[in-house]
Structures are given as structure tokens and as C-alpha cells.
Amino acid sequence: GDPTMTATTTLFSAWVLLVPAFLPASIVAYWPTVHHSPSFSNRHHHSLFVQKRLGNKPAALRLKSKRNNFQTQLLQSPTKTEAIMTDDGGKKVDVLMVGTGEYTTGYVGGKGADSDKGAGVVALTMFDLRRRGKVDRCGMCGVNGKKFPGIRDHMQRCIGDVYGGMDLTCETFPGDDAVDPRGYVEASSKFKAGDVAIIFTPDDTHFDIAMECVKHGMHVMVTKPIVQTLEHHLALAKAASEKGVLVGVEVHKRLDPFYADARDRARSSLGNFSYMYSYMSQPKHQLDTFKAWAGKSSDISYYLNSHHIDFSEWTLAGIARPVRVTGTSSTGVAKGRGIDAEDSITLTVQWENSSDKSLGCAVYTSSWVAPKSDVHSQQRFFYMGTKGEINVDQAHRGCTVAVDGATFASVNPLFMKYTPTNGMFSGQGSYGVRSFENFIDACRSINDGTTAPGDYDDGSLATVHTTLQGTAVLEAGRRSLDAGGRPMDIVYEGEDGVEPVGIQPHEF
Image (cartoon, rainbow, N blue to C red; front, side, top):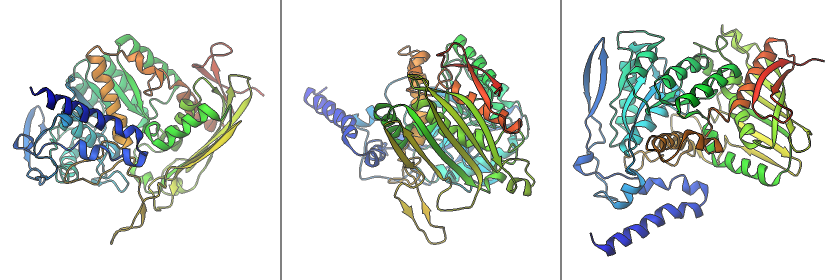
């Protein structure tokens, strides 16, 4: 009630919020480290209750975090600043995570993933958002419920025992003794309109799961590619509009400061599009990680080329549109391991500049037969406009780590900062986290009537309505490969249309 203290707190809060705008990206990435630190008073000491579904009889398994009694010298009690930075007073949302693999939990093949995401991303982020007052109930749905005991142990070891204040309570579907490929039907029925579904499952399942969740009035975020065909994309966009829900694609590269700066430079000063080359790879052991679907229901182009194709669609919105796609591939390594899939896929895409109908060319290459190296994923691109160029190697950020018993590594804490600060998760500024938090914030804003789903079609989020070109390019690439490399034309409604309506073989 002290007006002097209120004014002082307000000024300090404004300083906390404004200063990052004037700091380098490398510092901003860690800005939340201090000011997001929670209180360590007794009210923050959580016992961990993880729901364990045994048939129709739910049971609770009590787990304890080794970090729960950690005390800090930085903050002894909640502050006004903390309240502003974490619990903003908005209504919390319930979240259903569909998919239990590497990106959600970091658990693959009965053990932690051999990648840069051993603790997962989705579940860790949702538990932290719950700690910070934005998420309430969490659910997780997979196909094989028999994996859940191992997943719970893994999350306890990699999250509960590492970071303080994390409540790992999570209702799981199907039961621990059940296998159900359509478990998402039951799971989504347990959530209400306005809740959020986050889908990280094999590519060919995205459409059916997303449509089921939209049917229940849930907001939906789907990992890239959102779907595999233009027909499905258009149907999902229509369903989202009819239900008045937000449906988006999780393409975290849009929040990478290197990408964001390159995009802004390209749009503001590099003129019309002329040429782009991109390369993204992962090591051979990913063929084992994804053996359930690799070459059967999807390919490496859908999985990795989708990143740079989305960058092009985002960057060239209103400037150019893709008009022709040709796919080529290399083979041998995967088939030698008993997997009928391409090793590498290259899509050559012709883009048409809207201002003068001039043509640009983009070459997108992806591979999952790379050797194990200092990074999990090589990723780089070169972009040339008619007035300048950009060359970005986003795999190497100038940070290398060498530890006894481990290989030399180039690390990227801008994506996910897993290293705790004073026993707490401090990766809130990482773009891997911000991608989800931005979507959760948008859903909360829609639910309380502050915004509408259509407000996010302005490029602030990758929505189902603004990512049609990317799906068209990926589908055209797959169809070109299946047709022996025949070019595929992307069809638009009207001479200057920007939303694809079809794909057809190029006539010579």
C-alpha cells in the first residue's frame, strides 16, 4: 500500500522489461536467468505426483526431487518483479502433449536420446510454464502405454532431479498396460474447448490427430510439417476457422536470432529474391531413432527441409511465391541398414518475384546419413537477393565444450539452455522454449477475449492459414521424387494468387 514502494517497483519492473531491447542477443538469451528465478519459500516445495493409469483405475506415484530443498541467496521471497515476469494473472490453460518421443520427453528406444535433446523440449517447457503460472493440467498421449514407466523414470532423472520447483504431474494415455494407436481420441475427449494440444508424432499422423483435437475446440500446435499434403492443409485450415481456434506450426527457427535477423535484412535491403542454398543434416543413428516411419510414411525432406522451406515462405511473404519443384535424391546407406529410404533429398524450387515476374532459384538439401561430429545437426544457408547476400552457419555459434569422457562439441544454448542456474531451469530465453511459450500466450489471450485467432496471421506466429506454400513445396517434392524427378508445378487461383490450390506435373 506504500505509494513510494509501488512507484519504485513499477520503475524497476519497467527497467527489467526494457533493458533487453538494448542488449546483444547473446545476453538477452540469458536475461531471464536472474529475473525468472522463483521463490524458494516452503510454498514452492513440491512433491511430485505422476499419474499412472492402470486400466481404468488411476493411481498416483509419489516422487521426490533432489532439488526441492535447495535454498538460494539471490531471492529469499517472491518479488513484484517475479510476479510480473512469471504469473501475469491470465487464465491458465490445460495442455495435452501428443507424442512421447525425442522432442517431447528425450526418451527413445528405452533410454535417453543420443542427441542434443536428452531431456526433451516439450514436456520440460510445459512443466516450467506450469511452475511460472501459465499452464495447469498436463496430459501426455502415446501409442504404447507400456513405455510410460520408463518415461516417468527418465523425466524424473532428467528434469525432477535436475531442476527445482518442477511439478511433473502428468496424466497419461493409454494405460500402462495398453497399446492403442488411436489413444489420442480418448485423450482429447478428456480436455475442453480452449485447451491446447501439442502434437509431435510421425508426419503421417498429424492430420488425423489435429482434426480430432480441433473437433473438441482445442487450440493446436503441430510440429513441422503440419501435414503432408495440400489437400489436408486446406481441410485443417477450414476446420480451424469453423471452430474459431488457433492452429499453428512449431517452427522454432523463426525465433532463432540469426534467422530472424537474416529474414529482416532480406526483406528490408536485399531486393528481389535471386538464389538460396540450404543444408541440414543429422547423424546416421537417427535412422534407428526414426525407424518406425523412415521411408515408410515420411522422408528426410519433410523432416528437415521443412525448416528452410518455412524460412523462405516466411521471408518471401508478399515478395515471391514458389511455382515449380524438382526432387532428386541419393541412396545406399539407409537401404544397407534395412531401411527403404533416401539418404539425402534435394528439392530445387523456382520462385517467382511478384514485382516483375522474374525468377529466383532455391536448393534445399537434407540428409540423415551424416557422420557423428561436433554438432548433432549441421545447418547452414546462403541467401542472395538482387542487392546483397547473407551467409549463415547456425550450427556453430562460437561456443565449444570439451569434457572428460565426452566428445568435443559445438553447443547452441540459444536453442535450449539445459544447464541449470542455482539449481533452477533458466532456459526461458531459449528460442526452443519461446516457440511454445508464444503459442501458449496466444491461446490464453484468445481464451480471455483479448485477441482472435486471425490476429496471428500477421506473421507473428506460423499459423495454418499462412503456411500453405511450405506444404505445397514439400508435397510437390515428394511427388517429383516418386515420378522419377519430373518437375511439379504449384497451381494458384488467379495470376497473382499467393495461396496454392493444387499441384500438377509440369508439361514440357
